[in-house]
Length: 475
Image 1: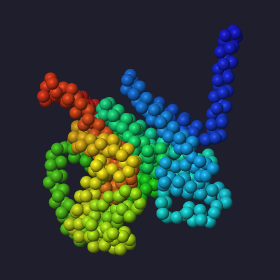
Image 2: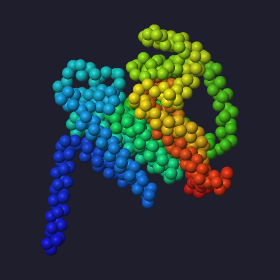
Image 3: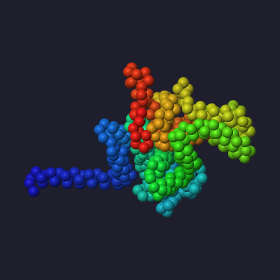
Image 4: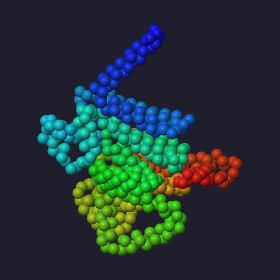
């Protein structure tokens, strides 16, 4: 072997040894960091698979920057903690409860000593979710990781985002999918809970997976493949039921709604018939006393949850009539909700939907954090304004994907709107619907930009070509 080749071989060997030592030290300090890095490399390769040119560069740049910024946020969380006073630091108060309880569950499974009070909390029904089991299992495998679990949340959220991007791109077009991906990755509120140890990132991943699987099940020929995918969707629904209360119902309503809306949109006559029949069917159903009791009970339950949020600390908003909010909030107000009248129930529903869109109002900022959130609130208003047009335009391009996104967004929005009463909680839970609204609003934004660019040449421009579900390009 020649001298230059031998020198090059020694340098390569030196670099390989140094890399191995670095990986070993990192794994000893934080095993989840190593696994997270490998997962993100695979995710970046998959996200850019099949893309070329500027689109590939944009997706890779946006995704890698999103990963780096989130890892920096976790590093800052670690550095800013005074570990002589607290065992670990958290972004949100609820995270401490999840992390501590998952560590107690880990210790119990491993047979390690556990304080009696901690043992009681392990089996406490309050806040019980399978997310705790996931965190505990991970920490059984790699050891206690109060900061590493944040990387798990990041991996879940980014994987769900890429899943939706890969599904939306062939259905709604390149530019809407790029804009939607960018917003999903960088909107501050979504960014905040994507780096958390809360259950939202895992819930988002599982819900996005169900949308992708349903889309593939409808597109794939052959009943065997469809049955396999349908079984996977059912399994995801069962997992969502253990992850969040009512999670399976929300998923089932989103999937069913999407599968019902899509064929109706493809046949305008069916839409007309449905519009004519729906009020009659609803009226007939509500004429039955048992159905009235069921619906009234559901509205009362939502009102009680809203009242519970209003009774919490922090900045709140009210949607019930004033008589349900005594000067001193106590258990007597809950009894009053049982006497809610029909008109009061209708006003409660309308105000809840209106406040879901408008809160926090820009001129009613009550804290520094609300002031920092103001730019995103303006973006939220724009997205809501664009959403109706986006739904119509997106339906022309791909009715199935659009219907699934719309159904999941509406179901999540209605659930959060009717039960929220705390501004911070509303902003956080609005993220359950926001990722699906983004893609639809992006379609309308692209169409608006296209019309503005073509306006001097022709007042009523022909819309850009789009691809139907059968692959034909139309206008």
